[in-house]
Length: 194
Image (cartoon, rainbow, N blue to C red; front, side):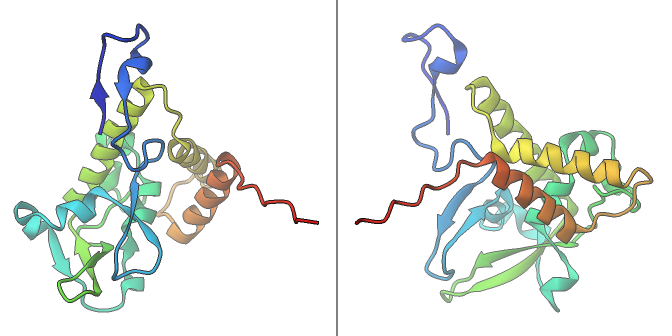
């Protein structure tokens, strides 16, 4: 959520108010629910799964979630440029998105969670919404560490795999986590009391 308030300032970044956003510097907000222990990233796909108009884009997962690609991991491997250049349809490219091949975990009506598989269009929808969010952040002068980590990850991956080939999503996630860890401020440990 951004509010544009031009009167008090001259630079564009100073005219953007971002107080209402739960995680204004990152790609996705984080939420906590009773059904999960800890926090999780709330992707556009989580929201879409709650909307009746997107119902045909989700199916219940039948089988082992390990047989599918976690949507967060897939989103590391694909950029808006991959969408524009239609690399998401090339099975030999890291950006390939199989239709109903990505999974997300959502809360169910019984206080637990369930896994859903999502259509290719939902994955591309997440990529497009992430791009729009990153553009707003850049206009507000925000440096998004997720964006920097993704760029560095894909640069490393593409350099190490010049021949292309499908993505190893676990390896991409490990590189991304390493790059992100280097960008995020370290939490300070309080000094022991004497």
